View 1 (cartoon, rainbow, N blue to C red):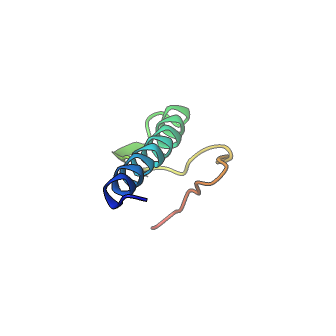
View 2 (tube, rainbow, N blue to C red):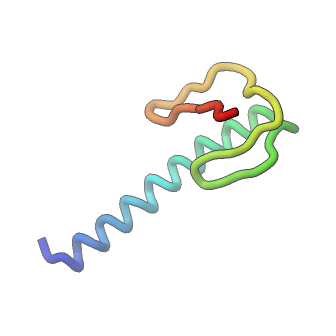
Length: 65
Protein backbone atom coordinates (compact mmCIF):
# COMPACT_ATOMS: atom_id res chain seq x y z
CA UNK A 1 0.00 0.00 0.00
CA UNK A 2 1.12 3.53 -0.74
CA UNK A 3 2.68 4.95 2.48
CA UNK A 4 0.68 8.17 2.12
CA UNK A 5 -2.60 6.23 1.85
CA UNK A 6 -1.59 4.07 4.82
CA UNK A 7 -1.05 7.23 6.92
CA UNK A 8 -4.52 8.49 5.98
CA UNK A 9 -6.02 5.11 6.88
CA UNK A 10 -4.19 5.05 10.23
CA UNK A 11 -5.35 8.59 11.01
CA UNK A 12 -8.96 7.77 10.15
CA UNK A 13 -8.92 4.67 12.33
CA UNK A 14 -7.42 6.65 15.20
CA UNK A 15 -10.21 9.24 14.99
CA UNK A 16 -12.85 6.53 14.83
CA UNK A 17 -11.48 4.87 17.97
CA UNK A 18 -11.36 8.23 19.77
CA UNK A 19 -15.02 8.76 18.89
CA UNK A 20 -16.00 5.39 20.34
CA UNK A 21 -14.02 6.11 23.52
CA UNK A 22 -15.62 9.53 23.84
CA UNK A 23 -19.12 8.11 23.49
CA UNK A 24 -18.49 5.58 26.27
CA UNK A 25 -17.09 8.29 28.55
CA UNK A 26 -20.00 10.68 27.89
CA UNK A 27 -22.59 7.95 28.47
CA UNK A 28 -21.00 7.08 31.82
CA UNK A 29 -20.94 10.72 32.88
CA UNK A 30 -24.61 11.15 31.93
CA UNK A 31 -25.51 8.06 33.96
CA UNK A 32 -23.58 9.37 37.01
CA UNK A 33 -24.54 13.06 37.35
CA UNK A 34 -22.67 15.33 39.73
CA UNK A 35 -19.54 13.25 40.06
CA UNK A 36 -17.45 14.24 37.08
CA UNK A 37 -14.64 16.74 37.58
CA UNK A 38 -12.78 16.52 34.29
CA UNK A 39 -13.37 14.97 30.86
CA UNK A 40 -10.89 13.73 28.26
CA UNK A 41 -11.74 11.92 25.04
CA UNK A 42 -10.56 8.67 26.61
CA UNK A 43 -11.36 9.14 30.27
CA UNK A 44 -12.69 11.23 33.11
CA UNK A 45 -12.05 12.11 36.73
CA UNK A 46 -14.86 11.38 39.15
CA UNK A 47 -15.20 12.67 42.70
CA UNK A 48 -17.24 9.63 43.70
CA UNK A 49 -17.40 5.97 42.67
CA UNK A 50 -19.25 5.23 39.44
CA UNK A 51 -22.65 3.74 40.22
CA UNK A 52 -23.95 0.64 38.54
CA UNK A 53 -22.07 -1.77 36.38
CA UNK A 54 -19.66 -0.55 33.71
CA UNK A 55 -20.64 -2.40 30.57
CA UNK A 56 -18.65 -1.82 27.42
CA UNK A 57 -17.34 -4.40 24.93
CA UNK A 58 -13.68 -3.34 25.11
CA UNK A 59 -13.23 -0.30 27.37
CA UNK A 60 -12.58 -0.78 31.08
CA UNK A 61 -12.97 1.63 33.95
CA UNK A 62 -9.84 1.92 36.08
CA UNK A 63 -9.69 3.45 39.52
CA UNK A 64 -6.29 5.13 39.85
CA UNK A 65 -6.45 6.55 43.39
